[in-house]
Length: 341
Image 1 (cartoon, helix red, strand yellow):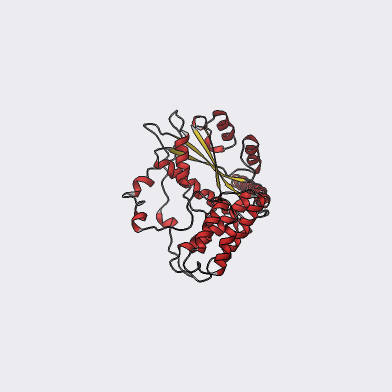
Image 2 (cartoon, rainbow, N blue to C red; image 1 turned 90 degrees about the vertical axis):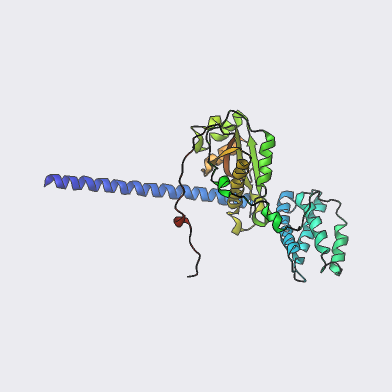
C-alpha cells in the first residue's frame, strides 16, 4: 500500500514538473515571439509603410509600378470604359513631374512615360482634349525607356510553348542537395537563373526583390555562421544566395506581410530555374531572432531596408547523390473543395 502511495506521489511530482516545464516553455515562446513581432513592426515603420518620400527614386518607382500595372491592365482589356485608367494616368504624370524636378530618373520613371504615351493613343482616348494636353506634358520629359511596356498580343500557341509533355519529370526530380561537386557555378549561369526567376509574379508587379550572391569562402563562412541548418555541409557549399525583399515597395498596413509572400514566390522560382539549368539547390531557412538578423547585417553588405527571406545553397550535383526521401503528405490532408457555409 505504501508503495502505491509513493508511486502515486512520485507520478504526481513528475506531472507537476512537466506542467511547469510546459508553462515555462509557453512563457519563453510568448516573450520571444513578442520580441520578433516588435522587431518586424519597427522595420516596417522605418523602411516600409511608415515612410513616404516621392523624391526617393526607389520609393517613387515602386509607387509608379502600381499605377503602371493598372494602366497595363487597362491597355490589355478588350473592352474598356470611357474614363477607365485616367486617375492612374494623372497619378503617373504627377510622379513624372517630381522626377523631373528632383533630377533623378529611375526605371519606372521611363516606363511611366511610355505607358502614358500608349494610353493616350488608344482609339477611345486619342481625340480627347485631355489626351492632347497630356501629350504636351509628356514632351517636357527628356527621358525614354529602352524596354517595351504596355500590352502585347499573346496567342494560345504562345501559351502552349510553356506546356510540359510530362511535368512530373521536372517537378518530381527536384530535391534539396546538401553535397555538391567541388566546382563554383559561374556568374553567367547564376545570372541566367536569376533572370528566369524574375518572371515571378508580385503584388502590382512591384518586383521588390534583391538577390545577394557570393562564392567567396570567407563571406560564405561568415553568413552561414548565423544560419542553423548548414552545420554538417555548409563549408562545402560552392555558391550562396541570400534572397531579400525591399520594404520600400510596401505602403499600407495591409501589406505588412507582403514582402514575405513576394520573396517566397521568387525563392521557389529561383530553385526551379536552377533545376531547369541542371544546377542543384538547397533551401536554407532564415526564421531567425532579431539578434542574429542584426549580427548578419553587421557582417555583410545587406541594405537595412532589405528583409532577409531565406538563403539558397547552389552547386553542381555529383554523378551519384543521396537525398532525403521526404514523403509528401496525403493529398486528402491538404486539399478541400471550397464551399459556402
